[in-house]
Length: 192
Image (tube, rainbow, N blue to C red; front, side, top):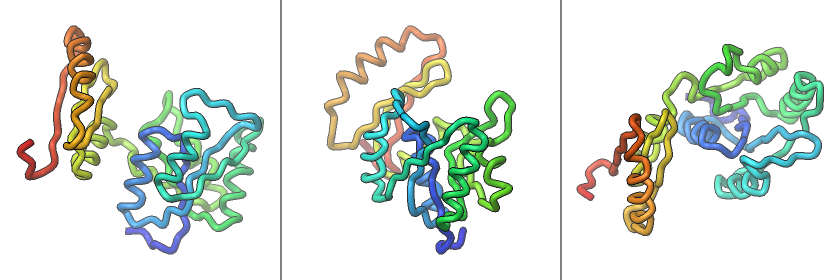
């Protein structure tokens, strides 16, 4: 358990990993006060558009802040992290899971000299198993398919069966892949 009075910020990209890290940080008792996205001076993200990140933050009931990171990037990140520290943030939470191309955690390297603690609650954990466990614990019925190591899934609540035709169509398409398998999770105690 972490002291709940220590201010934490989740580094937010809008993807599943930072979302899971937010969930795990809250479950561990961290006082997450904001979501932070590092952006270039003129951001134009195709994978995770900034308006979507704003909606996610609103849904999480947290403020969302964009911090500009200029080149050279190491110095840009140092400046952005110093801003967070100077405003009272003491813990950074990331959705990082593993080293990238053998490189250690970049944020941790930048934060260490600034006396910022970095929490990586997903580090070393298998993504699809973690996601499935969290959804099952939340009581969401899950139907998902894994192809070539990537999870492609459809998540639905028990009351909403409109995804059945899509799931069937995708399942039929994926049935030809040699590494395809499917799995279904239901909430504990459920017979449905």
